Image 1 (spheres, rainbow, N blue to C red):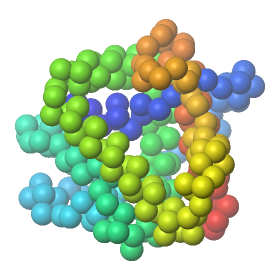
Image 2 (cartoon, helix red, strand yellow):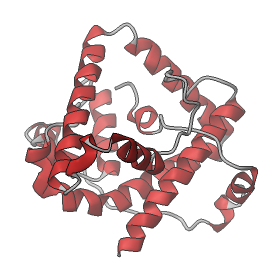
Image 3 (spheres, rainbow, N blue to C red):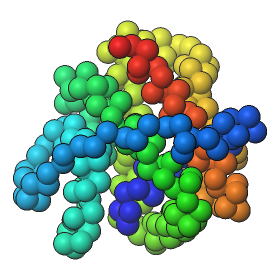
Length: 223
């Protein structure tokens, strides 16, 4: 990818005026993120890792790996969704890691939302990356394969987790999925999150952060 930050921050939407006003106070009231001592290993170490093991590395470390590979003109890792059975035993660790990973992603988002130049840069990066994607047949084929793999992964997980009636009551499972990931951009069969004014793009990012906060709250509620 041209910039993994542009990929992990693609999801965006709008939020109420009250939440927007509340967000304006965040730089003053939000505690600084915990510092981590992350050490990069030689790229050969990560290249030898299985997709499952690589996915369990902290997101912040994976960002550093991506940056170094870009600087060394190495291809980016694109492990994608993979198959459910090979990942099943790692799911508890995946959930455990998600608290730190989501918190790190939130920190990146706040950094952009509090700096108009960085927010504008992100919007332009997403647009440039998607324009390049439209002319890359290999990336388009990979994306189509990921659509298939994601559907299979979700079906295998639901079956294994006891939700075997997803095919009998699709409308209920669709509603639960939408509740977990409410629209943060207009539902119009178009992937155009980067389009619009900078203010509109900002609103979408704020809405994404609200969804992320809901998942963080759910995670912390389990503890």
